[in-house]
Structures are given as C-alpha cells and as structure tokens.
Length: 573
Image (cartoon, rainbow, N blue to C red):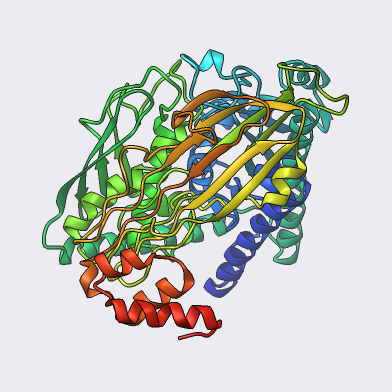
C-alpha cells in the first residue's frame, strides 16, 4: 500500500525497525552457546531492504561486526542468486572478505517474505569460540591454517537444514556442540526479527518496505551530509595526516592515514601503512573500513542512526597488501588488533582539523586470550581432568576525553563488554585468581586516562594449558593528547618470572599462572591543570598512588597524609 503514510508515521516505523532488530539481537544473546556472545555482546543484528542496503542495526553489538555486515548482504544476494531465494531459506558464511573479517565470525542471512513476496533480509553475526585449524590466535601463516571456511551457501533451504553441512562442521571443530548451537541461535534470531517485521507491516498495512526504506535512507543521508558540510565550512583546514605505531607480531606496525574532508564526503587514505604481516594480525579492508567509519561517525554525527546511507559518505582507501587491506590468503584471525587501532590513527589526523573534539589514545584492541586446557602430561592426571577451550574478552582503559576522564577497563572502539569471572570459569577448568583495576595505569592529565586491569590466570588441579595471547601495547603505550601523559603498557609473564610474548600460543605447565597487566588509556591536557579535588578522589579511591599524586599532579605531602587518614577512617571527601 503506497502513499497513505505521513512523515510522522514513517518515523514511527523507523523507530519500530530499530526495536525489531534490537529484539533480534537480544534473542541471540539469550540463546547463544558461546560466552563471547552471551556475556561480552560480541554480535550484531540488522534489517536490510531488497537490495541489501542496511536500514537499521541493533544497539547491542559491535561496530566492527555491524559496519562490516552492512556490506555483507549484497554479497549474499549476488552469490545465492535472486532466482534461488525461497521462503524459509537461511544462508551462512564466515568468509573474512565477504563477511566480517575473520573465520571466527559466522554471519547468517535470512530472506523475509510477506504475502508470498520477498520484502527484505535479516542478518546477524556472532563470534564463535572455535572454528578448527590452529585455533583463535596469530600463529597461522595463511588463512588456510586458521580453520574451517564456509563460503556463502545455504544453511537451510525452504526450512530444511543441510545436515551434510552440519556433519562437516562437527567433524572439523573442537567444540562442535557449542558451534552448532550458535548456528541455530543465529538462524532463530533472524526468524524472531522476521516475525516482528511482519507484525509491523500488518499493523501499518504495508505490502513492502520500499517507501519506508526510501524515507530512512534519504533522511539519514541528508543529515549526515549536513554535518559533513558544517565541518567543511567551519574547520580551519580540511586535510591532515595521522600516524601511530603498535607492536605488531614480531616487528612494529605503522598505520598512516590522510584524512580529507570535502563538502559531501570524508576520505580516509591509508597510503604508506605497513604491509601485510607474515602472521595472523592482518585486517581485511571491510573491517578497517568498519572502524574508520565508526570513528568519524562518533566524532561528527553520533546521533544519526547507523544504516547504509549514514555510512555512505565515509570513504576508505587503502592499497592492497597493506595491513589494513590484506587480501586472500593472508592470515587474518586477529584482524581486530589492527582494526581496533584504526580509530586512534584517524583521530590523530582529525584532532589537527577539529582540536578539542576527540579523545586521547586508549588501550585500543581488546585484551583477549584463549586458554586450551588438557589433562596434565608431566604426571598422572586425575580422572575428572578434561579438555576445554575457554575464550575471555577483557579491556584496558579508554583514553581521556577533552572534558571527561577515560573509562576504566572499558573497550573503545569495540564496545565489547568485559566478561565476568563466573561466566569464564563456568566454561572450563580455568581459574581467574585475580581481576582488579590497575592503579597508576591511566595517563595523567586534567582528564585522566582510564585504568587497565590486573589478571592472574591458572587452571584447576590436574590441568596444563596453552595460553593464546592476543595483546598489544607491550612496547607502544597509548599516547597522551594536548600534553597528557601516556598510559601504562601491557605486561605478561608467568608467576615464576618466565617471560611471555604479547602474541602467540605459549605453553603453561601444571601449577603455573599467567600474570597480566592490561594497558591504561592516555591523559588529555597538562597534568598540572587537573582539579585538586579530582586528584584527591583518585588517591582516595586507589586509582593513583601517593607517588603519582605528588610527582604528576603536585599534591603536597600534607594533603596526601590527610587523604590517607580519611581512607583509614572509611570516610569520604
């Protein structure tokens, strides 16, 4: 039915679509088997028009997933073929270059039919714990070593699941029940989205989504272009270069970006960035694009809903075989490490165009690790010793903002939640002996960087394990902005003092622990300008030590002693 709806009713439908995909995402959170989905929210969900253009995304989820998934549905339509799309179908892939960047993300797409006609698509993505191969880590030399590859194909046709596909998957992964359970959860959450969409279409007497899609995309495009035009008119300059260096695997990686703001678009050009690495930290273009767009959208148009049109004016250019445009068969399992640093590189340039807008550098990439546990081999293992794969997501501190302190142990730009100890220990015989904020890890400034964390990781009696490290900022801390101090670096070692590397699979013997200190965010502005009451509160709460209060912020010995006395009495300032 066309022409019977006002601008107000279209706005209501737009809001309803956002609610629909949020319910879709929450269904995945409730039904997923993997703790990375249930506890950390490492997922995305969205609804698309007939042409594969994203109309709405769920609030729950990560920008890397959803912004990359924005391009994925068009690949599904092309690969499956419009003549081969049937009611009851479900499609699947983990293709790093046509999905969301590595084999450990499974994307599922389902066509949505109304009154026998195709009206759109639902898509969702989830990070799964194991996909076979070497396991989740940086050690592979090509994508072929990183696990089972699922090209874009049918998971189900006309409601019937491909049992041969299920058998192949089960025969190639370490956690088959968990993975197959996640696949069904993904398919189910798309079905939830479809049902709610049909309810909406019946309520508003819609035969299709064409007019709604036009309203959403036109308004989003116009609003985004207006924001970009405002920046173009008012900025003192419209071109700037950004650069940052991070640890890499065996050698440092440098990201370079030239940011150009034009009247109707913003271009991020990564010419000059380091080349493809030999190990699995490379980033497909789709994932680098996702985080470059996210960074700029956060800074310039944060309140405009994410969809195909609001992302369109943010363009990314990167030469092939740079580490932000790695092509097949480059190893890409830990593409998030480089991808999560893209916003800080972009902000290094944007700060020169729009000073006082963007935060200082933060921890950047997630502080993930995976523990592969097994019965001890140096002596007889108890009968209850088991094999298990435990993946946990953790965060360092975010960078200080121009007007606010950085957030402690909070992931930016990924937005993934830190996983609780109870959920981690429930998945296998791992023990988290310590997990607490890391004092003095946030860089000093009028706005202090967010704190990192301490963690101590071991295994239950009778187990040894391989520890798959996925860390950065061991050698390259988060840099302060406008005079702020750097954040603390990452440290990793065993409890007997044995050194460990920031990346790669490393053996941990029975009875040993891994001692971790995750990085802090950098400070913003000159430390001596911090409000004295804020310094005293930091000292009282244990965020900083007496030495930092004195040396970085100039707090007197008498004031430090007074704060210590307040703390002993259990009082507040």
